[in-house]
Length: 250
Length: 250
DNA sequence: TCAATAGTGTCTTTTAGACATTATATG
DNA sequence: CATATAATGTCTAAAAGACACTATTGA
Image (cartoon, rainbow over all chains, first blue to last red; front, top):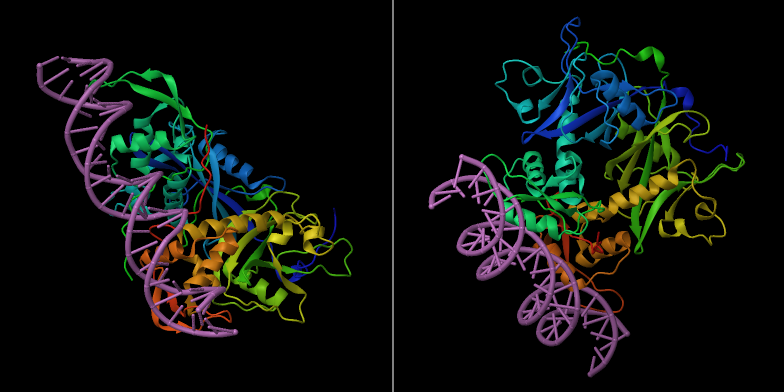
């Protein structure tokens, strides 16, 4: 199977590009969606916050590069994180230092993700990234390269994935309650959902969650103990957990 | 904004990769889904059929490379084709001649796509690619590189896109009938749909299609003339055109 | 006339969402 | 006891799907 194939005979005209992987690692903590960002180096004037990214090594898969970027730049090791390729950004000029084609990943991890304190990385509230009144930090300065666009695309991808897949459980550690799962949906979608209808829908979707015998103790303000659950075997949800969408006319 | 940024300081360890774009151009003709494939060169022993692909040039966007691959390898010019990035394939060893990171595109074009007869490209029935009894051609030999996987992914993406977006109309030239639109869904999904319910659903989805005053003459076997339509302004469909899915238990 | 295709009407089932009710905890 | 949260029940509206029926053509 070392056959040579057609359609690759145009090598001479083209220089190789640098290939990088950038990762948007997201978590839900305290009901807020957060993304991992790397602080700019103080020694570099004009540098801005960026997603952790690394160039691809010779004998490394793209997934491996994503994990290495998280480990080397943030000290974060999330082998269990759900990695999903987002898309590839390759416009000439997106990196001022030359042509860099970047494969962006969306990574979802169960809370909490604690960046290595010796590294200059932080989990940043996604909602505040669009805050025009931010006094300082990534929201005020904007993100490096086209990483603002990548974060937007990652957010939209995550929102869509919650509808049709069981990906929301990737934000949670087992066991979890239905209320915790609902908090994930509310944080990612930025809406509030009816607890009763949400719970019924989750439980009526085959393979989404599996109820356990145990219950979780109620919070300090009381309330009935909640049934604990683990992830079900389903990857795709049927029926889907659809967001409200405003219909449009023509 | 020519600021230098953090997290790109690991250049020394990494060789640049070759970056290519491969395109899965799909059409629906005669009720069958087809994909554009390039014939192997007879002079190269063991070469197999492949998707049209080109390496990315220095000052070219990835989308431009996709269009160039179609033009140079198949003589196909489809500026109106809907181009959508599929995903990026970058495993070491996917190309026997060295590390090539390939950005795959899904392209949908209105029928018919006629490859330049001086080029060795053909529209191949996607369904027959999995036929184990094929005497010769791409189905018998398999596709080059990981292009079989790319075609599978492209097919699944197209199927999913028909549910939630108005992409099906990209397979049709305006004006078109509801029956022609239904034929697209049936070809891509590989199912048969109830004409009455399908038509009602399409017309009740705001912005999907816009009915015209004109009608199309019936076929040779007669029948009531069908109302002609053009594409509506909607990109996302609400409600969606959901496929039947077999529920799964846990 | 019949056959074929387009389009409408009707009925049933399923699902979503609003919201009341019951269950079980804390203070 | 009141209050908070979990879980269930009930009602309505929307949508999907099965399928009968009408409309308009060709043969």
